[in-house]
Image 1 (cartoon, rainbow, N blue to C red):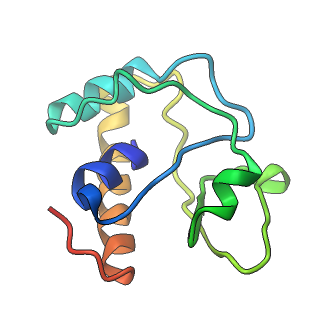
Image 2: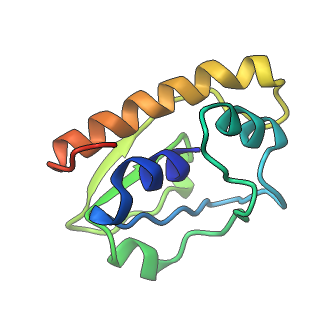
Image 3: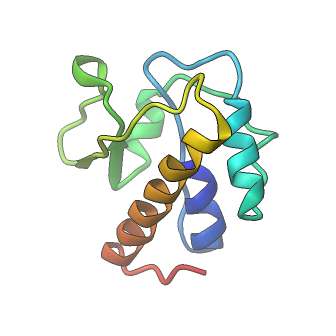
Length: 117
């Protein structure tokens, strides 16, 4: 969801990568539905494992509760977004998580000097 918002709001003004330490086999259907409600299609995405190449290509690494398995690369700015895990949750439960993610993405883009929208 964060990548969907980032891509939608930043457009071609910034690049984003998404990866996890233990990626699921598919994107959560409730997350796809929640994002579709706000006009963002993430149905074509596939969960991926983060790579060192991803980390080397970015200025900011956003983690979401991965603990000790979070990637660490010196010289990168890190933000840990402690949010409920939407995995296995209903659409009604995912909506507030989606909205929190949107607010955080907007704030991140602001700190990077990238106007959203």
